[in-house]
Length: 294
Ligand code: NAD
Image (spheres, protein in one colour):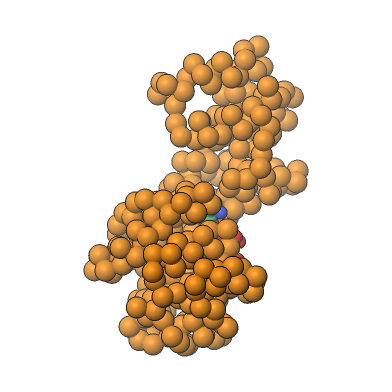
């Protein structure tokens, strides 16, 4: 089984390397030749274009920034719809708008090409370790067929429903994380303004109901004023925009998500777009004229 891998960025590069290490026959493509060279050094073949990859692979994994990139690679000029054989499957592991996943999948199916959406959570360290969490939408039959392939890059692979469901799960994840970071920021600001050491508040609450993976990962970063990403604010803005779009497509109201989105937009204007999303605390510091830095 020949596998194509398109998009060798922060996530795609280590994921494709892990597939090669596991013995899969991989053909990779990215506009950035240096990234292709790096994966080729591990044993992958280099494709010359999306068309070249699509023409020779039965399975094509995509790991691209957002919906327009996936649409272009799948349905654009020289894209997968034009150049892949009927029976090919596209496994899109990018985090995109689920409305777009369904629409792109419907167009591909007209050419006999199937699609699954399989976005990931875990970030670069877990992409390197091969322990990502993968949430899969598509047919159950394809989920079963490609489970072992996905497990090569993952610690868990969960089936969530029809095409688009994987991205709905991913957006739900991103909503929980964004709101949780805002809540931690608000709580630490409250502590400092009322004369209590934020570190002691963190230690006091982390074992109780307020404890969370987000609290443990982000509170220490906020108190150290270390905003090296991690996960960049600009990527989280992309995810919240997709969440709001998917919500509005089904007349769902996301009042808290909208508010955190506006906080992130303000931070972008303050030059923080490339900082870790824990920099949400800077917004709170500004409006309350305080610093939570220890
Ligand atoms: P990235 O920007 O580092 O990589 C994207 C890659 O796609 C780049 O190398 C770019 O050259 C390539 N690319 C873009 N258009 C292309 C095209 N038409 N043909 C070929 N290559 C093309 O992004 P990333 O951080 O690897 O993220 C990829 C996806 O995974 C995003 O949807 C992101 O939201 C999601 N994600 C990222 C993280 C993270 O921590 N970085 C964590 C979980 C999920």
